[in-house]
Length: 172
Image (tube, rainbow, N blue to C red; front, top):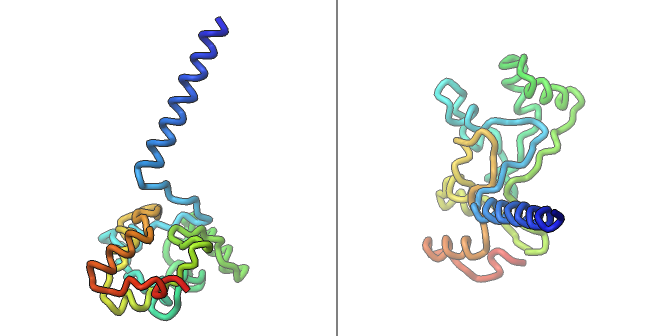
């Protein structure tokens, strides 16, 4: 009897590990849990929605090295009177009332040990669309990493567009 149990446990563990490997290999990680479940699709794509441009909320994308997440005051510019009954908007309003920002979890980032210096400015000046590097975020209800921004991926893009691949362009 113990042999059957032992084999059953081994099979279950192997199936679990196989499932994790397949999930990881799919290349589409789950969306990180956010303090407020912001729906990009509702704000960008939905026909009866406001159809905002990325730069409306991520206003510093062309001015700083990071796109920046909007302050609660930007969000409350509309949501002080729109969808105020929504639980998510009420959570947002509570942060705004306390003059705090939600502790958002980044979806795209560069590992500190990679010593990557990145700024959106030259990419915007070159006319790249946000979807090129971030995927179709405007169509997502919950943002997840859709593009695997590896060094090879960046170099391939730079080569295709005739941009320098000198190490010091990105690594300082």
